[in-house]
Length: 200
Image 1 (tube, rainbow, N blue to C red):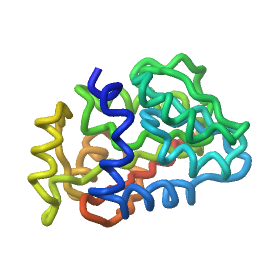
Image 2 (image 1 turned 180 degrees about the horizontal axis):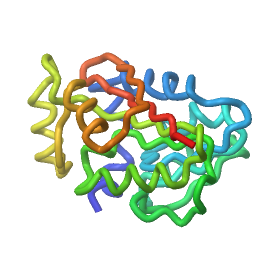
Image 3 (image 1 turned 90 degrees about the vertical axis):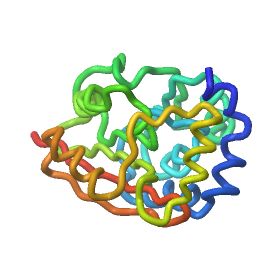
């Protein structure tokens, strides 16, 4: 599996190429987390966001489909006794409805065959009034290094779609999500963060 194979080098690539965003994204997402929150993170990767969320919340379940990525995330979060790391498919979560106060899925929507299926599953496990936080690279934006995108594709990353901020907003609107706020973490490859408040 591609993500297992690159798990040991992923942080290095992100830090060298897009360090400002890679470091800043976790801090911005953590601003949405409250001390009593029980949080689910899908596609946690190497735990870059997880380790920033963990000190802010009561419990964090960090999940990914890649075993290699989960090993890296577990290492990063080993000092946090409120974190559970486990393998999960974000399109078929083995969790009851309305279980989590916040649900985070970082930099994965653009890689999925059917992102709307994943969004509905994230919505299902989020409690009414809770938030679904979805950061995604906006690598179709003006000024983004197209060579980096091409190199990632050559390495094996399969982009199912690419967004700029306008098309990212349209994606959520077309999917029927209206109560959404957005912010951007700027850098070499910026990241747009959609924050959906689940209606009761």
